[in-house]
Length: 182
Image 1 (cartoon, rainbow, N blue to C red):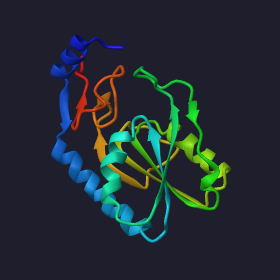
Image 2 (image 1 turned 30 degrees about the horizontal axis):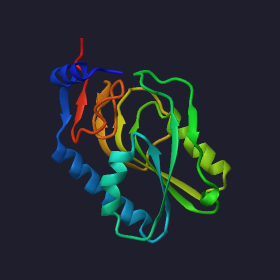
Image 3 (image 1 turned 30 degrees about the vertical axis):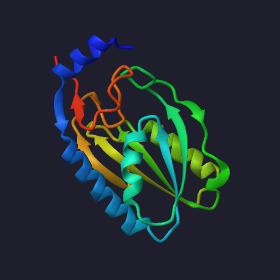
């Protein structure tokens, strides 16, 4: 965990990738795309905690159609910057059986966490599964899944803000920053 001083120093050296306005515009566009595709389907939306909380909180009021909401909690990062083994903290509920499900996440990086979540939803009997991510990192490597709805493309750097943290800090920023490159 960073000290307060370390967190402020890290932010001071970080590079702005997307402004608050750019993030809001991307979320509004994603909401329109989701509405066009799923607005008549009464889907179950599952937010991936804790990273997707900011994206979810901004997206939900823009979705003007009937839906149900729930969450899952699976992570490969913890407080680190490298993915580890998948840890399930809250599994998807069985309310997804026979339903159209939209999974909301903050970032599609390597795609392994989101792929594991989708596999679990299919195992629980979801009729159709879609994904919406605030950001997708352009890693230059193949990913096991593609998101159906993507807000913003990111460079292949460690980013934070808008639900994404760096050593446990700065999920609450309305902008997206990248760590300073050495």
